[in-house]
Amino acid sequence: MTTRRLELDEEAVERDLVTIVLTVVELLRRLMEAQALRRVELGGLSEEQEERLGLTLMLLERRMRELCAHYGLEPRDLNLDLGPLGSLLPRE
Image 1 (spheres, rainbow, N blue to C red):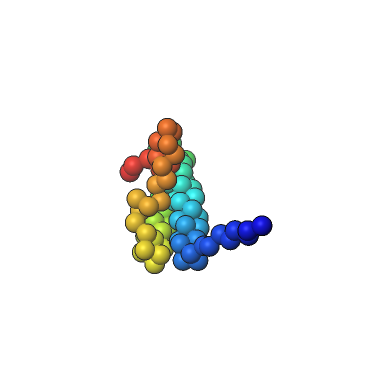
Image 2: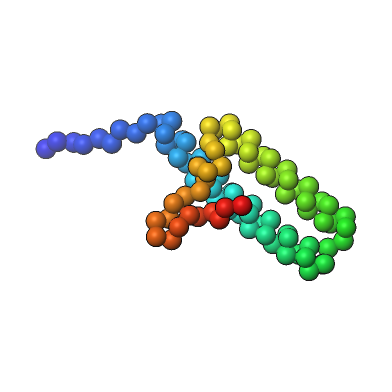
């Protein structure tokens, strides 16, 4: 009986895991941004709240770019191809 071993490249596994995690975070970031824009358009926020919200979203986007750069990823790497369903993330 032959035992088969699965050989994994640790760096590839780490990069793939980071890609998946950052993809989920990017998806959530975009959903939060869309919701924030809706709230602003409906006029339910004070000027100060709008300013804080905008700043927070800009900081989150910057941090995402930094994390992508740290792991050698491009933003397009986070857009998973879902086959017949198309891409996970709509283009901005």
